[in-house]
Amino acid sequence: MEILHSAIAILGAIVLIIRFKVDPVISLLLACVYLGLATGLGAEGTVAQITGGFGEIMAEVGLLIGFGVLIGALLHAMGTFNDLVEVLARRVGRRLPYAMAGTLSTIFPSIYVDVQVVLAAPMAKESAPAVDRRIGLPWLAGAMGIGIFAGYVFVVPGLAAVAIAGLLDVPLGTYLLYGLPIGLLTALVTTFLFRLLLGRGYWNDTTDFDPDVVVEEGRPHDETEDVPLAEGTARLPLWVRLLPILVPLVLIATGAIAGLAEVSNPVITFLGDANIALFVGLLIAFGMVRPSLGANGVGTVLTAGFHTTGEILLVTGVGGSLGAVIAESGMDETLAGLFSAEADAPVILSVLLAWFIAAVLHFAIGSVSVGAITAAGIIAPIVGSLGIDPVVIALAIASGAMFALHVNSNFFWMFTTLLDLSTKGSLKTLTMATSLGAVVSLPLVLVASLVAAAV
Image 1 (cartoon, rainbow, N blue to C red):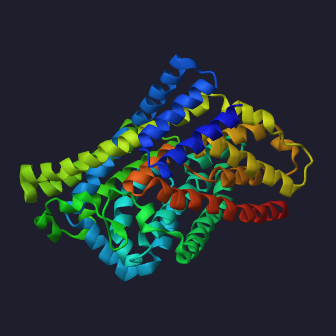
Image 2: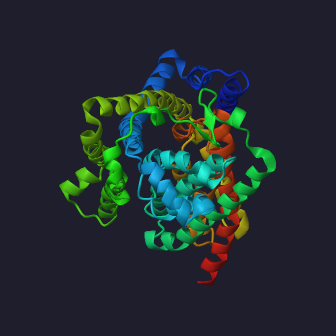
Image 3: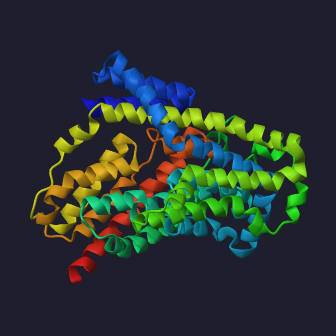
């Protein structure tokens, strides 16, 4: 019954938000209450999971969101994004979505997905008109979504990739050898297919952007555009003004690499923490803007950022509450009992089954990593008897775990609010792009099975 009640809760929230225009926070909380009571958690248990899930998500991403949004506001005040967009327009022009998808999937998997979307969203909003005045932002949004998660599941040291490989005893080097080309191809091919879909009238500015946001030239109008600009910093080289982003990325990547190499250093561990790294970036941005704008000007910029932060935090936290209630309902155990992988099954059947288990678990639970880890846990005990290289099963799980990221994911709500999309707009970009990516990567995994068999 957990599956039925979870489906009712998720679909009910979607209908309330899209059809009846009920605020996402209210809709998601109603879904939480229904699911908790319907699955026997009781009044106290339901409340405990709602508040506990909210708190856990805030502990994980609260500071990341706050620091990231404030960095974005200060970078805008320096004119950094405008100048960066001009450079990108000259260098890659309309190919920017491919550049973004490829970069996010191959270079930045060591960075948490939450940090990636926080830092990439402002650039996507700013550069949308240069890509396409009509569908620039949705195309970039889809490219961001698939780029982030293709790297997350296929490319070491992405968290899901490392977890899947570890559970199935696949060496990280082997997983990277197969996963890197699959992740890159998945991101690029999906970005191309998504562009074809957008060209067929798929996108509607009226319904797919946040209705409270004014849309100008194919992108939402950001309230930080109304804050004062720090003219003095515009004379600094662009790479210097990008340090508030580049320094945190380097610090986080260094910490991740040190962790993989099992190098223990308290300074690297401290500075490599995503929260501390982004705070360092915020301090750098603050130090650059303060001399030009003064205390009052910086205060105005940060106030606009705080306003945006509050909305994102509330919606993201409630998304975490729904995920916690679903997890506590016993969904993962129920689904594990419904599936059983059989030894001596044909390769294609084993691959499809692994993909399907991961896809269903992710769709139900709302976390790519939890869905992938749970699927790997179900299959791990019998993977040795399947007669297939374990890396193939691992890749199939990774592929399926991307399928249909939607409203029961806190990332979905971060993505929605950071890009000023409506719920329908995020379903048409993030959910569609990750679903396409899961389908696109499946035949690539089958090709990998042939390579692994030949080797």
